[in-house]
Length: 91
Image (cartoon, rainbow, N blue to C red; front, side, top):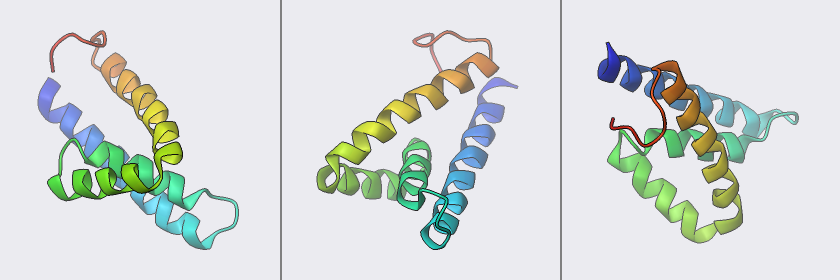
């Protein structure tokens, strides 16, 4: 249950943020870039292309990426709590 379900949850959440980010580029009430960055940050743990884009963005927009890093840490902790693990305890 653990590893496969965790991967699926990360992929679903990551892609949901990507979709929300694209919608946010056109809708005035969503933070499109922020959602895209969060989605890329989540997907960067699964996809090399997302990691590369996220690292390029880290160099170009360091302030935004610091903010995204805080959000990603909260999301990681939430996913770990879903699987009854404490941060720092293995996969």
